[in-house]
Amino acid sequence: MENLITFLQENEVQFEIMYHENPIRTAQEGAAYFGIEIGQTAPTLILKSEKGYFAMIISGGRRRVNLEEVSEILGCNQLKLAKPKEVKQITGYTVGSVPLVGLSMPCILDRNIFRYPFIYGGTGEPTSTLKITPNALEKLNQVVALLD
Image (cartoon, rainbow, N blue to C red; front, side, top):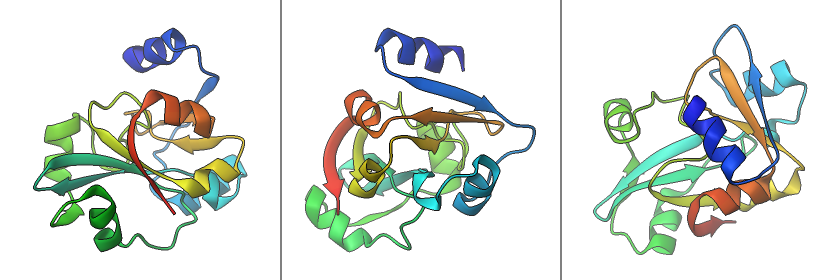
């Protein structure tokens, strides 16, 4: 957590770390807990392709993601969600706690997150949440594609 806070401070972005007793496991739980729209929750998913791994940050309001479409955007043959074991191995974090920033991999952002002043997502720890602006998220990640 200290590394994340230092990273955010060094990059001079507006953020807030919000602590909670229990892990927040779904977009619905996050929206209810923070009293926000479900679209403001932003899980970080890890995708695997023949080109390597990608982080994909989506709006919690998105019903589903067409991975075939995403693979076309990225120029990959096959794209799938990384298995929980792979996520832990690649990122050092468990599924559901993967941080919104600080990962050293290319990132795909959902354009829907830009409709909100702040989004809420992972910090790397299950009992805290990062509140950050979408523009800061774009600035701090290696964005390779935007998802419509």
